[in-house]
Length: 177
Image (cartoon, rainbow, N blue to C red; front, side, top):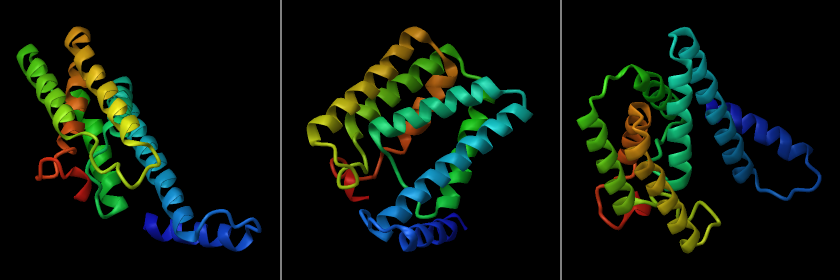
C-alpha cells in the first residue's frame, strides 16, 4: 500500500521534474521512507495520546528512532510490516513494568549488542565513511551508558528493543543481511 503510493508520487514528480537530478528509484525510496516514518510517528503519538501514555510513547519513539539512525538495524521487506511492528513496540514500551535489576540488565545487553553488532545494515545505503559510522556507533553506546545514571525504564526498554534489531545472525557480517 505505502509502496504503491510512493511509486505513484515518485512517477508524478519524475514526469514533472525538468531538472532530473535524481533517478525514479531513488526518489521512490526517499518518498517511501518519508511516508513510512511520518505514518509511524503520527500513529504512535496518536495511540499514545488515546491510551494516556503520550510522553512515554514520545520518549520511546525518539529513543528508538535516534538509536536506529546511529546504529542501524534489521529492515523488513514490507513497509507495512515496519510500520506495524515499530508502532506496536513504541506504544507498548511505556506500559511494561521494569525492575531496577532488569533495567540494568537490558542496558548492559543493549550496550553489548551495539558494541558488537553496530553499524548494522548501514554500509552501502549511506554516504558516510567507515570512520563516521564507527563514531555514530560509539555515540549510541554512550547514550545507552548514560542510562545507567539516568535510570529510565522506558529508555532501557527502547534501547534494548532497538539493539536486538542489530543482530543478523552472522557476527561481523551485519551488512549482508
